Image 1 (cartoon, rainbow over the protein chains, first blue to last red):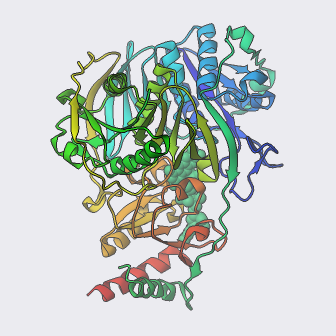
Image 2 (cartoon, chains in turn brown, blue):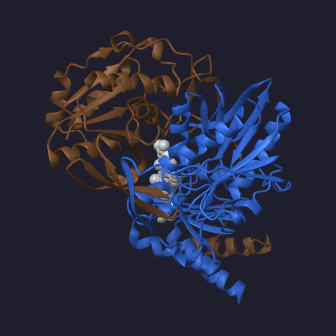
Image 3 (cartoon, chains in turn yellow, red):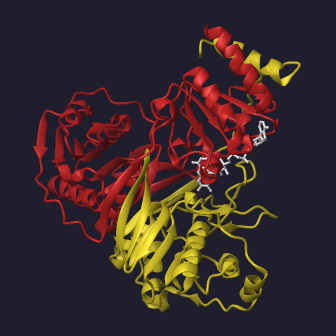
Length: 262
Length: 323
Ligand SMILES: Cc1cc2nc3c(=O)[nH]c(=O)nc-3n(C[C@H](O)[C@H](O)[C@H](O)COP(=O)(O)OP(=O)(O)OC[C@H]3O[C@@H](n4cnc5c(N)ncnc54)[C@H](O)[C@@H]3O)c2cc1C
């Protein structure tokens, strides 16, 4: 089974709001000095799942990213984890594209690669929290898309049985290949790069494709970002004191009782 | 194209509370745009939901058929498209749910129009739809202009007050043939019963545990505290990812947005993605060993200490106070 994984490089989502920085225009999140950007977490889950499927069923795994030159780092990391090849779409004209523009560019690249049974995407990116790109890819390529997936239970011939998250459990769906799945973090724990993988990543050539390589027409964005604004929290909880942790626990119960909360 | 169309959300035929919140958001926009407000429901067995879907809609569109239960993206997408064709709205709003996160972006792509999901503010500027959506887990607010026709948005739960306007005077039934199951077919559904039968969404009190619990073996501390308070059990994402409890307990951006009167966070650091789910909680209590943990910037009251010592004493005192 040949699998394509879409990878986005994002500012580390663990940076607290007091340390996040924006560019002067207030339109982009900038990674603070010393905290390098990372592979989007859900995309790492998607990659891990692709590697596991390859281990069981053979085939190859291709990582596909869209971003500036620094995004090569995440694609190298994907190779270090075990991906066979990686491709970057790095056209400056696409860096400010909305979900529709990014989805179409990725779809065009996937058409150009033209050799896949399954596309795995993270359910959303942790910087924009958008959750749309995967569906624009699926629509453009006329593929079935299911999200968020917490388990791939079985592969039989041209069908997958997957678990899709619902409010109070999951539904099992049978999906015909080729298909696109949006992956959630419950599905697996991504592996670390291996030494051999890291060496392969060092040697790997990651081609950079432009919009013109993909035959993309200029597009009018459907959604325009006006500005970003950091939300700072300054308030501080009233601390319940006591001579021991146990005393604090009892004091907390008294406090809640006094407040009429319990 | 004119009119603001609001899709209600139903689960098993029952209208969910967020539907009335989206109705409020829609009414505000319809007012600002000077356009009519329309409602729509897709599902099975909608008689009760139809009577409960308040919003002051001039018309309520119904697509009702047993094939809409269980939910599948393809069927909902198809039905919604027919409703949109029938009333050509300029703006369409949806509740932000696990279902709409799947089929609404596909609908936007299909209609080739603009969509922003998980919005907390919606405004009209002239004929433009301008929305605010928390990004980066909630640490940053993004303001977006949505274009296209119709312009679409999903609305975060627990942000708008539920509508108490009248129910629709006119109900328009659309007969939409359900598409033959295509390349995705439903097999079955497994639901996980909530601990103590209490669902996070409806809970007045929630006791929530995080990675700080240290392991599944310690989870009984959370369950015992919840039982003593008659509370629902919540958790942070690492707890779900480690398999200590099922996904349905997760509070936060990629879990549930909760609205309790009292939220007790134990061993939870207070990452923005977690806080995104408790912005509507009235009183938040944090129990955490680390005085510098971000959860203390959201909590009203806090205890700096080890939960293994704090919670047993807390539970014992609760039991005394309650007897
Ligand atoms: C796209 C995206 C979506 C996400 N969605 C969600 C979501 O919906 N919900 C969510 O919760 N997270 C979500 N996260 C994850 C989030 O970023 C944090 O990683 C997560 O919330 C941290 O969980 P935690 O607070 O339990 O763990 P940690 O951050 O590890 O915190 C553990 C805390 O326990 C305390 N502690 C340790 N031992 C003790 C003790 N003995 N007694 C008392 N306190 C102790 C520590 O001081 C620490 O503060 C998301 C992340 C991303 C990138």
